[in-house]
Amino acid sequence: MSLIDLSKQVALGIDIGGTNTKFGVVNHRGEVLEKGNLRTDEYEKVEDFIDALYEQVKPLIEKYGTETNFDGIGVGAPNANYYKGTIEQAPNLPWKGLVPFSELMNAKFNLPCTITNDANAAALGEMLFGAARGMKDFIMITLGTGVGSGIISNGSLIYGHDGFAGELGHTIVKPGGRKHWSTGSEGSLEAYASATGIAITAKKMRAEFPESMLSQYPEESINSKTVHECALKGDLIAIEVFRYTGQKLGEALANFVMFSSPEAILLFGGVIKAGDFILKPAKLHMERNLLPIFRNKVKLVFSELDEADAAILGASALVWEK
Image (cartoon, rainbow, N blue to C red; front, side, top):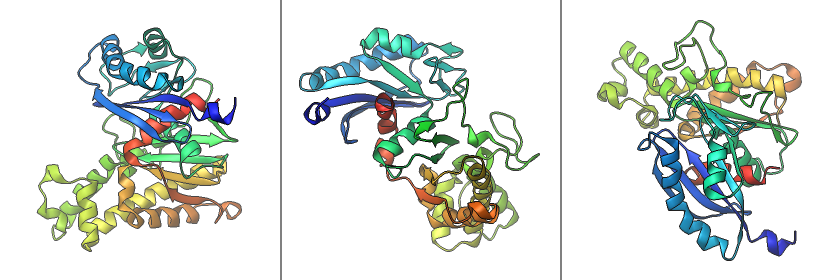
């Protein structure tokens, strides 16, 4: 394929969330040429969802298909199985059981469709278009409502034998610790380092220290954003919430480093807006828990992808991964 032809190749990237689905047409330079969205939770049947998606996407395919060529469709979704092209037992989606998503998309769009979980898609997007360009070994950690992850080793995503490898957010960082609100496991990383986990920590700490600025907020308003606002104003309890969160994250990252020896760990998601409040303790406790041969070798950096477009870019990267 010539460089001229390559410049005209585009892909459709789709990010399926429990509430909303975002999609966009992406070129090889990582530019989102056009994008849109629709509600995921309005469609009880996956076939109806795909029909609605097709109606919105069809004009884009026709528009860009005249001067460019669509290489395919990439989809990031919860509990997506790369090998089977299925979404399996996704708790936050309206479609239960085993959904043959790629097969249904292929039939409707007449384009090849590749699917993986949203965190894996984010890792690919970072490798093609973001801070991990040129890296062959890194881990992407997404810190949002939950904690997702994607592991790149020797330039390839680690899927495992069944397609579900890399659920680092559900690894146990404090045995017998905080009970997860969804899985019921005790002491998982997600229970501490996610936005949800930060809110739980903040509520506990403000109950112990009512002098904190956090006490000025009603219970339902306590979240990672309000904790950040208080930390910026110098509230010591809010700062401690992030320090504790960073410690738990850093201890987990040390384990991840020692099993895969990555060049870097990239952090992405709404939680990283806390900046050094969480990055410094995470780095400190990661290094503190590493064997000497691993220390001061692994970069801990924030994603370079625009948060609004990252999910779309990551999904589209699936098309060009092979």
